[in-house]
Length: 153
Image 1 (cartoon, rainbow, N blue to C red):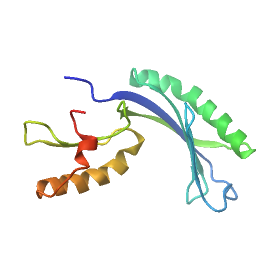
Image 2: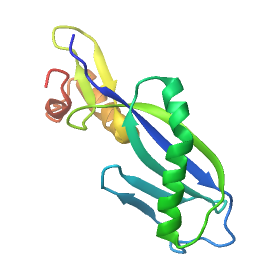
Image 3: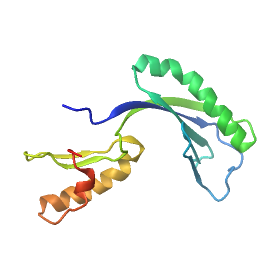
């Protein structure tokens, strides 16, 4: 069969709590450059920053890259904030990404199997759509949006 997604690694860190929120109104920053960067604050005053995605090869290789990727994220967030943050935690994970960035949702042609494959950073968002679309499909209601996410696209 054909490959539905390619595997990517993503890296993130959380700072020690800050004495005051760097964004008093609260915000989520998402830079669309490649590699992208995202940042947000937490209820306990930490800054979470992530990005620096690269291709997955093995868990060991991902672990070896973590320190270098953490340092890159630290440089970027420190420059953005104009202050030095102290990292409390850093981690990496692997996710699947489709060529067009869309999930695969719907019936497998010629079978009774239904799929909800939410890939990439939008998996949670797509899971809500999958629940709505697949429920309607099972109930026999019209689901024209399933064409967007069909498995054979």
